[in-house]
Image (tube, rainbow, N blue to C red; front, side, top):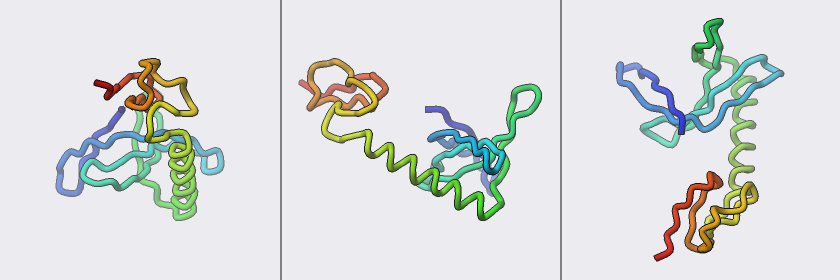
Length: 118
């Protein structure tokens, strides 16, 4: 999983796993949706690409934009939950990992088998 490092108000570096990226035509921004290292809190920042292909993360300061991002995040997790069943490789996005032990397998749609079959 891709992650980025933020520096909090105390100067501590925190690794934040990126959940997904999103581009809004309505607001004209690209966003990085991430999980805070120390908690399950999910947040977002605007990603602004520079000419040299590097990028800068900027805070979202508009309430309307936050409301929109909250809807996007909720929709993402609803779709993610619908596609992942916790009783083996029955994901709608893949054909399982092919290990033949579907009831003991945890493929998470990445085709990497974490088979728990003994």
